[in-house]
Length: 244
Image (cartoon, rainbow, N blue to C red):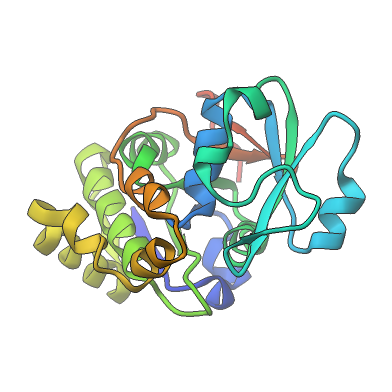
């Protein structure tokens, strides 16, 4: 099994994902929010790239979520804080989400055979699904301002660690995959404290989102794994493999 890690949404190319399972990671906060919203009972979430597109697609009864530069978008039901996506807001409803980096990465992964989302909240479950699907994998870090972030890279390293435990085939990594896996192993014993020192964690904390940081660094709180089906993110259910 080949696993390639891509550093940021801007670097994702079609050749990185085609005929592969793609998994998008945006720990702070898009993929953490998507996992949470579906776990709280949302029917599905449609990721879109722009605010006008989100407003255009929004229908009565749907919730709109998203941010630009960490701020909730005017007129939307929620921002990009997973803690805003409560049962009261999302249960039994469809949603639309647009964020600065995370939803862009999901859209750019569109040619993959499968598109999943991972965060620390569901990383082990995601690794198990990826091993079950048994295709080569592209781990797509959303990044921040077109740069790899500490939290996405260490989550990617943890994901690789769990995949190596679950996969039947030997796992081969690209250079960035080797780096993030070794970085994770080096931080494993004190991971949460290391991540709280990251630039993005400090920035969110300064903006008053310390509870989001704590929540997004929680490991394996959910077994739910979001997967893209016909442009909708829904909970994964085991199925027959696609014919590539």
